Length: 341
Image 1 (cartoon, helix red, strand yellow):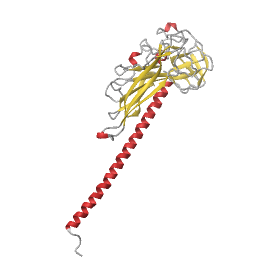
Image 2 (tube, one colour):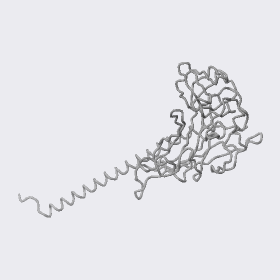
Image 3 (cartoon, helix red, strand yellow):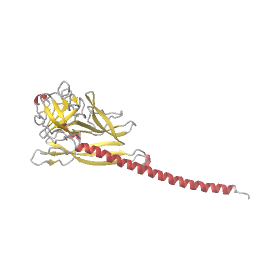
Image 4 (cartoon, helix red, strand yellow):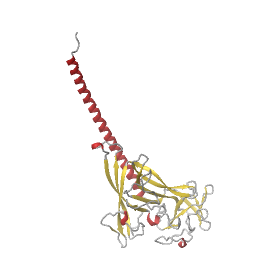
């Protein structure tokens, strides 16, 4: 009838606070466990995506639909083959952390720029294509293909048949007639209209190229050039980036695209094989990019594999001492289109 005493009320409240504290602690512990598991899942997914896309590009470096190794290249910028078009000079080319690659992407602290001290890897190949060459008139500098709808004036392309391949710039495109012209007037990056393979190594001078008629049944595809690197993202963090060629009104430029967030570092080492003898001899150890003096497939010590070393952080700081979780993962990728004669 008198109700609770003050002591009883205080004891009841204290017990209630203890129970509430226990419940809150369990909830916070479960929330932290959930956040850790979620970030671990994101880390694993980011690592899987990074390695899958990057390794796929590296494996396909130097490929064309015909599998033709000898290659002519008439694309020039300022008198030299641009690094993004020099497939024969190095379909895979590495940049050490202190090596500049400003012709592809600048190093700095702005969005999309490469992070200082991180490695970069350039991969050049022909894009997958089912466009078939049905006729070639080298005198008139015209290709007739099964479909021209995927090409635009100014595109850098790769054409191949069973004997050789050539890299050149498309001039005009007629989708109705299914023709592509590559004369020097309409395709100013072409230093020559001759597409004949002159022999290894590919000469810098265009005078060595003669006319060649590519046989019907060959393939034509856009040139796909990609630089993989760790760059600054829009949030001020780091992400794995990939550049791609962009054609705006016939002017070729390099555009960067964010692929996977929270990638903190990329380090790449390379394995070479000495092919001067009858049997290739693998090097005894991996080397950095600045130790490779010749990236071409005709080199004496040709690069045959790349070891990709990625460092990733979790999106949230859920580790000990309120730090982000870190994972350090390595994948080895062999280069399929390497000449180990």
